[in-house]
Length: 282
Length: 306
Image (tube, rainbow over all chains, first blue to last red; front, top):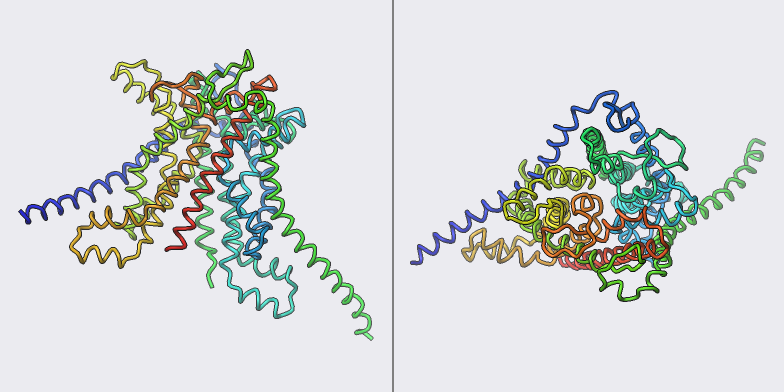
């Protein structure tokens, strides 16, 4: 009787392990499926022409997504220009003043901003820029993406700089180096790896964002470098072409997915390599 | 003589140094303040621009299911139901998997190649853009759901609440697993050993000691995943069917708060129409904010205890 019970418990133990292992690996299946599906469908349309040509009208074979690649590039640049300096300097502020009311509130604001749904950021960029300018533009899309980058950069900067030991700062100050030079020439370089990791992760985050671009950058079938005109972006191409009824466009969307996933994974990988290589260690 | 000449610039540079010092400090505080101002401005903008609809509909906005741009009458009940249904269904589907992953990484295989593969893969899952999930869902998942519906003998839409929940559940697994695996790894070994010394099997230690101890952390992770699911736009928009009729089963097409904004914002012509959509955006913002706060609060409590 007692022995029977023990055996049941041991069996239950085994079953439990089996269930945990199976479920864990079942959770990976979607990723494998998605990646293999994208590679399978996307690689066939990935040619040199695909990367350098403009999209063609429905019915014509071929065509590419050069305008979307340029557009995505433009959007990332527009987003980074204000977001990186602002994010890094706010991160420095937070790491330098741990207590204090402004730090507390800013930290809270960063958390909230991080959790804000991307579509809401899109609405904001529409209200602030699109309505005022009277047109969809790369600028408004870039600003929307910049707002999404901010919290990631602030947090990684703060966390990285906090890891740097006080002794480093004290040594610099003891040598008579002014505070701002200490921060700029000693602390920031020491934490550069972590900050760059944060920047890359945030770029990876916004490069694939579609929702904030729907009513800001809007999409544009032509090539443009003008930041006050609507531009196309890779995620927008995927969304518009995937939901279209034409198989030729679906093929282009698969190709664009391939490029986008490759880009995002490469960014994440680079970020991880930098993080490992330039880890803050003392 | 040389000293005399060089002393003047030195003094100058010192005052310039002081000035730079002050400017530097000011730049830092201003940028911290800027983020605070940005968030406040976001909230106020949403509030101001949704005021026409707030005034026109008041509380009926929450309970009315008519969404009629032609006669300018708007109620968001359909979208609330859509959002709640898809998010909670997604959580329900994702929980067994995310829990298994956390137990796998946090307890059974703390080191080694298996758990590092699992960790990397879940991080990759979090990095894939949501439009790609939507695209894949549209072409792979929706046909599967349609086949299922044909087998069950219901109207085969394919797109709908179920498809959206399934794709969402895949997307939120990394978020739900990320915190719980850390909390599970933090469970002190002395209480686990106490369990073993009483003759408990590993399964009993996991289900009766580790999971209850890590309960609030798991809860926090689940909340963050919920916040993520509520605000998710693209993947849901692509597979939910975009119907503004109250869904009567998990197979019927629907619309969520985020997907209705994505679909109708650019075509919203009337002032009231646009303002109603912005009000939905405001609610989305507030709900996400609340959930994030509760989640963070629980995490903070857990990390103080650990």
